[in-house]
Image 1 (cartoon, rainbow, N blue to C red):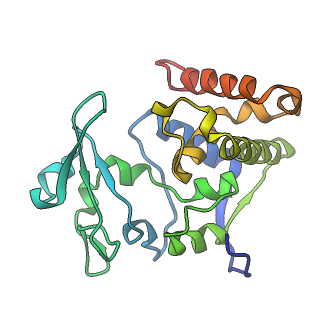
Image 2 (cartoon, rainbow, N blue to C red; image 1 turned 120 degrees about the vertical axis):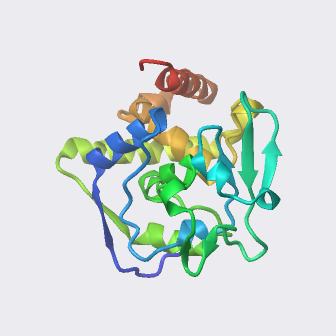
Length: 215
């Protein structure tokens, strides 16, 4: 990640953000992100997964959609244009904003700031925004939570090959999301004296518990 000085942007209270992120992962409520004039997520070569309930399916021209195999129910994918822009990004803004896909509603680049990582080398605009985000802490407990998320991210990043291949823990997004699901395992230093595979196994169980109905 680039280390030059960046103008800070208030990311909000870490505890409040983490609670909202957990709710977004469990529901369709999405994230409330203070994007300002940033359009990084629209112009950074992301493929957008569209789910069966997405109203955007009626607004995106078929030429931009492809099917996705290997998922539990039908999905469509919208790939970026050669310049990295979303096909629905027109005249500097999202042309289907009112019916944008759930994937877009859920996206929040603060998750990378929370995990202490960048979004990947091909996404410099988002990486610059990540550098700018500044969380606040309403208590020592919130700071400890943030440090635990970063510890989880560091461990997972170093042990991606230890996870089952179908978990697909390969991208910065997948690592960051998993980190905020299982951060409680890293709230103390017990994990440091455990075998790496034992920690991986505990992460898997914690992630499954997080995603279980009524969790």
